[in-house]
Image (cartoon, rainbow, N blue to C red):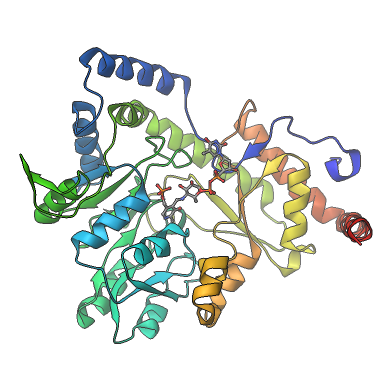
Length: 407
Ligand code: T4K
């Protein structure tokens, strides 16, 4: 295979993004039908019938009593913290999560402390959570990265002993389980993202899943300005409501999920087969602890590969493959956190190691056959390794010329 870094001709004409939304033609057709029905009813938001059906479907799928659907997972976390009375103290959050997780704590008036990760699952290490507890710790919020669960039983045992509240970021974990238990089923409320880039989407959206009736009642009031009874506003709520059109997209997607998941699993297996035996490539194990939705495919470019991760990233970019490095460099290293809590970058060696080598490859493709595309991407990676000397020459030349231009 010839590489675009040499020929100037990328393998993909259209850029293939990690996280490009998955919308089958049948899903789009069902969405149009359901939207038309909503317009026909002239009932478009404020706890409409499509939203109520979606909540029942999500709760049933997650085997929990309640799914409170809101307009994104960030607001889900914020109203959950509020409902749990968490507006002070410190939350321990994972060093490997999307910035929404610590941000939501800060918006609620809390402080954050980052815990290191388990190098295999990439989720919060229970042992490091215990080390990061201080007299001010009031909450712990592990993130189930790529739908691989944090060790919830261990985290919950430690937290319960110290009177620390547990909630979890299950943004990636729709339809995933750990040994048969799904988000919301570990004795703690969890929130899921239904963003357009996720396995299951309402375009923008999210849900809190819980078995706690009182908590669900309060969350439903909080998402609706705090209206807790007809004609009464008993709490300081916000607008986190979901329109019927967003709910329609969610309902339209549900029938497609089994086939979608099967295709994603096949794409994953294709990557695994095509990259087996490539030295210095380690694949993040998902699905080993239970069911996964296979939305994410992550690998680590380690020392034995012969090229730095960032060079591989650039080679793939030249082929019009827009990969992501979730969640490089770690929230604690992003501008806002570096400025406000610079000491937090210390003591997170496993997160630093994993995020320094991670690459997330596309699992959905636009106007390109998925299996052939996964094969092609793996072939680019193999070729880059085989021709690592030439690739490094190209990299150095590119950097030298940039240096010359800018100086
Ligand atoms: N916790 C975790 C662990 C999360 O991952 C997230 C969200 C949250 C909490 C908060 O959930 P929400 O409040 O969002 O419900 C994206 C998503 O916006 C975000 O939802 C997601 N995680 C995060 C991991 O990824 P960005 O800033 O990376 O988005 P963006 O626009 O760069 O999109 C990613 C790629 O997808 C791009 O390469 C372009 C492509 N794309 C995107 C969209 C929206 C498309 O091809 N088409 C599209 O329509 O945050």
